[in-house]
Length: 155
Image 1: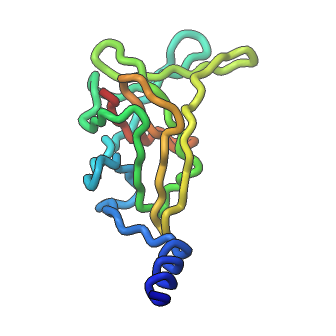
Image 2: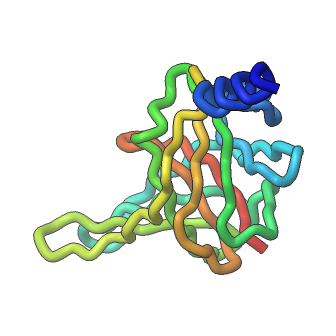
């Protein structure tokens, strides 16, 4: 009995993760029960809009990666990507594509990234938890200073 108690305490203290592990590195996967769904990894195109606008676009009106969960959880096996530099944004669908617009200038009002909690599950494995409920729509993680995007849809 003492051995069992010691084992359970040791297990809790070490925080051993026993769930599924992403196949590819530096790619967020949506966690759905014991399944991992890779996000749609692509590069956003950068276009100049009116005046001080920069529009980032992703081809297609909807992501191929979908979840019914309003507060999705992601797992990512980290190699080069810094999870703390990932920002989550909602994308607008216009003209058959997904897009987000940023403006420069002192009074520019830009989209705010959505809150994501980052937890290091074990060496090289990170859990990204969306803090708030997301309404149905198109979303994308993107690292700071990069046009790389990891898209998904909440439906």
